[in-house]
Amino acid sequence: MAVRNARLRTLRRPYAAGAVAAAALLALTACGSGSGSGSGSGGNAAASGSPAASASGSADALKGTVTVLAAASLTGTFTELGKEFEAAHPGTKVTFSFGGSDTLAQSIVQGAPADVFAAASQTTMATVTKAGDAAGTPALFARNELEIAVAPGNPKQITSLQALSPSSVKVALCAATVPCGASAVKALKAAGVKVTPVTYEQDVKSALTKVELREVDAALVYRTDVRAAQGKVTGVDFPAAAQAVTSYPIAVLKNAPNSAVAQAFVAFVRSAQGESVLTAAGFQQP
Image (cartoon, rainbow, N blue to C red; front, side, top):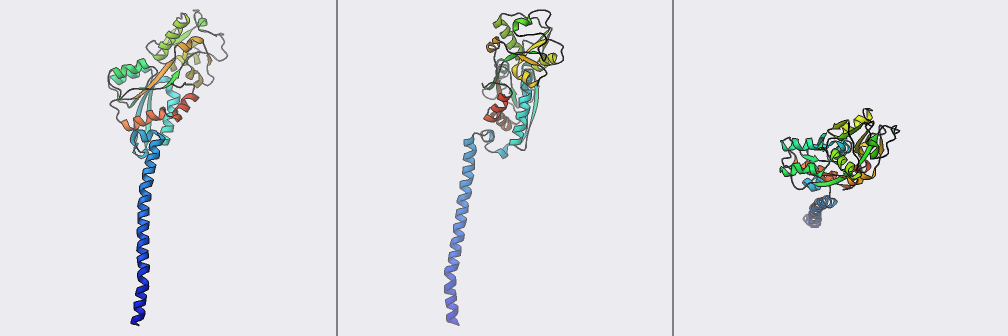
């Protein structure tokens, strides 16, 4: 019996040793796999240039609300981009305040709490940067051109800027302090045309609404606004529009309450996905 027990012990020892070795090998493999996977994921995120990676290094780190002040002409596109950003980064929420760029810029300088500012002109953005309220250098992300917005079917047969000169034609323009108004002044000057509008509006959406309600015969608005009106107005191109192109800059604000998400949103707007949404709306690449 003693001999038999000795033989059993002899047989069990190699098996036990093999089991321990196998367990150790599995543990080492698991550790190596975990380390490689983590490193690879991080590397892929950085290489992809995703907004989350560039802003905070991890999509999971993006949480909370980001407040964006944006030019009225960006209403449709930014609303869509906000939804897409929230879908890409669960746990975030994008809130917007749209209006005339100059009014928004003044509110920022006066201390209005916000994370991001997207203006319809570099001149307007300069109001914010000169006051030291932008974090870093603003980046251009889109361009836009003017069109003459008229009622569907163009009942007044307005085909040029010159057709806006007669006093019998009621015209709406944006105020000269608003980017769409400044662009209108440039275009009219380039064409050598004088227009006496019946109203000056504080943002491009208000000028467009005047045409939609048939309160005026025509308005100088952005091409993207004509497209967004979806048939409520007709757009008329004119050559001088090319000499009054509007460039759109965007910046994270210096005192942004949620700078991480703000940086990620700006990166998202400038990404291929953001460019696709802007282009579909009629904006041109910067």
